[in-house]
Amino acid sequence: MTQRQVDIKGLHVGNDQPLTLIAGPCQLESADHAQMIAGTMQAACAAHGLQFIFKGSFDKANRTSLSGRRGLGLEEGLKVLQSVKDALGVPVLTDIHLPDQCAPVAQVADVLQIPAFLCRQTDLLIAAGETGAAINVKKGQFLAPWDMPNVISKIESTGNTRILLTERGTSFGYNTLVADMRALPQMAATGYPVVMDATHSVQQPGGQGGSSGGQREFAPVMARAAVALGVAAVFIETHEAPDTAPSDGPNMIPLAQMDGLLRVLKALDTVAKANPLSI
Image (cartoon, rainbow, N blue to C red; front, side, top):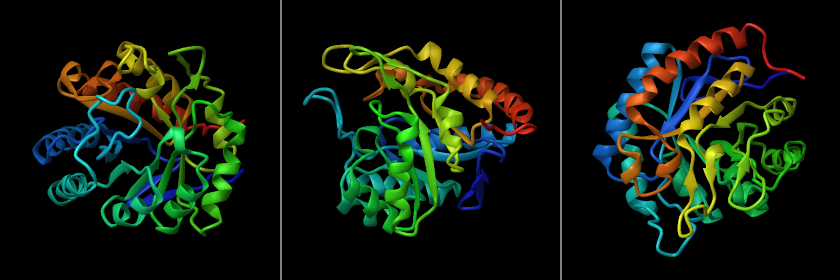
């Protein structure tokens, strides 16, 4: 299978290309906060020879409970993402939840992300594809990796082949996920770039009753394992103070630990890409 390469604002993302890091906070909090995290990660990626895409969500529409903090909202969130692009010149990624969000979000975001729970929503996938933006689809916790070609075909029907596929764990009993590393080469067999979501794969959905828990100590393990296989990118949510973050704190990697992790990931990627991922 020929490996496809997705060009994103000058970056070349592919299973046989140098590793890309997709990283940022779970929720966008402010322009200053987003620029601080993006600037820190941009510098660390540059130091270790990694490509970098900043991620941040303007809305967390799938919070466990009604009391969960949703985020800045579409208008303010897009302003924050634009400020990151203006200040640092890095590509940005954000989630979309409704078809009518796709066009306005694509005016700012370089990558539109389809949340895992929505990966089979045909109208959303088609609306996202029609923007022409790169589309990162998170494989649903309920979906087998070999079912992803059905998702791909919906986006391809728009003529858009700028597609990334993300593994983020599979439901395994109540409040638990398991990461099946076989999913990475299985999705890579489609030819599209594969991303490993190292932080959401250690999430414990609804594990704290009114919010999700997580085991952040295992997120670097997931990242290292996936990069050693030779994936296109790794997705990591990070925050300077995860325990006080508005969402997903239990599974985010502290910002201060990211530089050391990236050093290891670069070394693993160099070895892996000498013999690209295949099955």
